[in-house]
Length: 144
Ligand SMILES: [Zn+2]
Image (cartoon, rainbow, N blue to C red; front, side, top):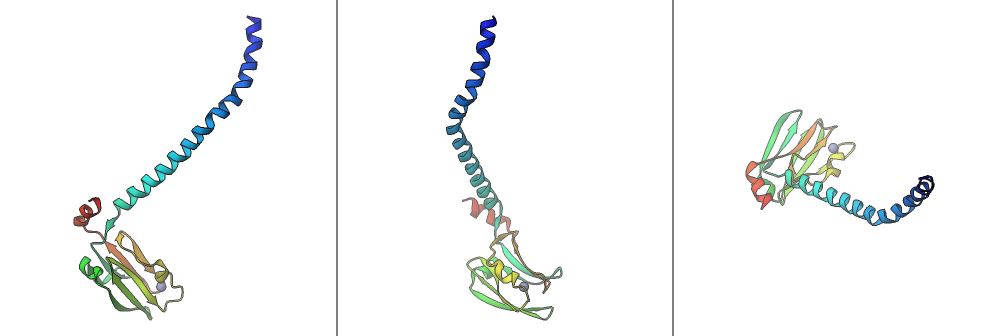
């Protein structure tokens, strides 16, 4: 009884080292699982965003112009003016963007193309917003 009690602490002391060695391949699995989860979440979020069913140019909550999905498919530019700033909005390939603006920060232009609802590109100085509109009919296209 006494002898066993004396041996047990030794076994306990040796086991952490052995466990650490055995856990290493497991650590790799944990990392792989985390990566797989991240990819799955990213895929899920990109599937849950909806391909553009259209878009709208909104100024202070007022819709200045709407674009249909067919409009977004066409390569075209549109001029807008807001708060004294001038904007060139470009459509094409089912997407829309602020192509040029003379606003002070150009954040709207740097946002680039947006093509999936509910993405937006905003120009704070010009109170102008590009908003991609969803279309329930397009969900099927994405899932296929
Ligand atoms: Zn801007």
